[in-house]
Image 1: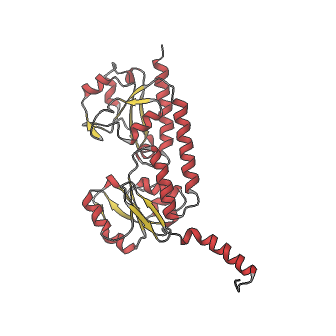
Image 2: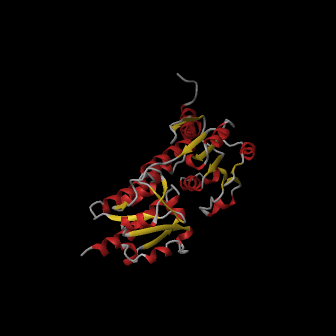
Image 3: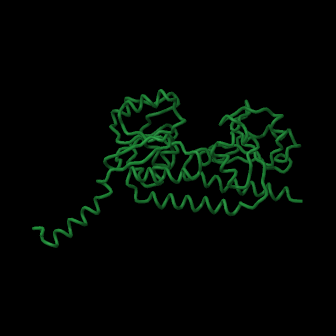
Length: 297
């Protein structure tokens, strides 16, 4: 029989129960297939992409992010964070001085040598590289486990629910041909392996260049004309039309031009693999539906 009075034993039980998320070791596998184990939930986090920063704020641990990459601007509080990476690379000395207990890294955003230099700091590093929309939800859960986020399971469930609703709504619709212009000179687009192509498929649309092998590829005007896209899209900050698609107006033989379906979407929503990608997906689905209506006899 324990010598502790019953009331004290009960109180100790509830205290330990409350502290359990803070005391338990957290083990997850990141998108690079690496096993990552933290003895305690992360409290000092460095985020190395704007999308990752958004995701950390979305699961309620934005107050633990101590530094971020350039262009981490959503939500507004992220704009106040110190910058430790820019187009020129990562400031390894600054990261080391901050003494983070977790670095979350965008896998394809940095060359392998720079990633290895970062890992040489011996700071736990989670590589974020979602290849599907579902993997965004699973990443939310894994980052939630590493941070003991109470809201991460709900955020992941809501993301899956919205995604499934979009898929079900457009599942039986007639396919629509879409050309996504990444850059205008030279003309660059994405293959079917890119996350944006899955956004198109969610809407019942098809990337006209989905068969290309490179993730990002250069195409010519003739190839776009031959593909006969019904919608042409580009992205800009805040979806402000800056004329990136204007040159296509010279080709009225394109269904997208003839039916006025040159669409500018919000770059931050569509191009960042975070929760707001479904906002961009919803807008794209609505634009695709208009093109679908125009194609009906």
